[in-house]
Every structure is written in structure tokens, then in C-alpha cells.
Image 1: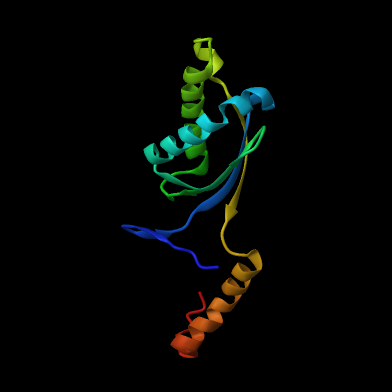
Image 2: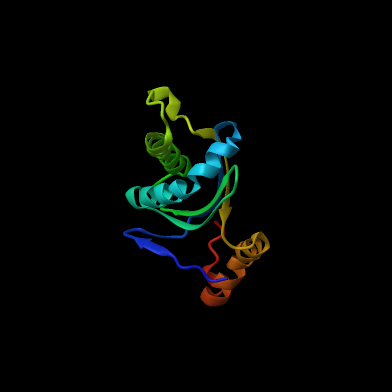
Length: 145
């Protein structure tokens, strides 16, 4: 699997995450009616907060997201912005009640895992890196740090 790394002034990065978010109390009926607006809202917020939606799937009662988030941001920071802002936008579009406390659409819970290479592949790379370096530099350069 090949990865494209994004570049910033002092870092090459590929921080990709699989994230699952759910609406509060898993409100299935409400969730079904606003599904298209969730897609549009998330897309708008991804541009505003500088993260990329690689893939997503909105099911009847939860959302799967594959996001690329620059290392200058934490996953929790992006999710807080995504859930908080989308709740306000969705509330303003769909709710007949205009009270501020009604804007709690998303559950505080989320699931996140990193997405990259196969774990066994990474383990082998790390274990064999010293041997590759010695092959290139020669054994005399082994600094035994």
C-alpha cells in the first residue's frame, strides 16, 4: 500500500483516522431525516477547519469517517469542532425549538483508531531498520546509543 505524505515546513505526514460518532441517544428517526444535511455540513466544516474527509458512511444511527488530520491538530480538537458546529447548524435548519440547550445533537462518545500500514509490516520495518542502516553505513559507525 503506498501513501501520499502531505508536506509542511518541518514535517511530512499522513495522519489518517477511522472515527465513529453517534447522535445522542441514537435518535434513529431524527437521524434519517437529516442525513443529506449531515453530509453537506461535514463537507463544509472540513474546509473550514482544514481536515480531509477521505471516506464516510452515514448509517441509520451512526457515522463512520476516515479523516486526514494535520499533526498540528489533535483528533479530539477536530471532533469537538465538527460535532459542536454541526449540531448548531443542524439544529438551526431542522429544529422548531430555538433554545440554546437543544443543540446537543451528538453524543460525547466516539471511537477512533489510526489507519496506516499493517502492524506486522511496521514491526518488521522497525526491527530491521538497524540492520539496513549498518549495511549502508558499515559496522564501524554503530554508535550503540
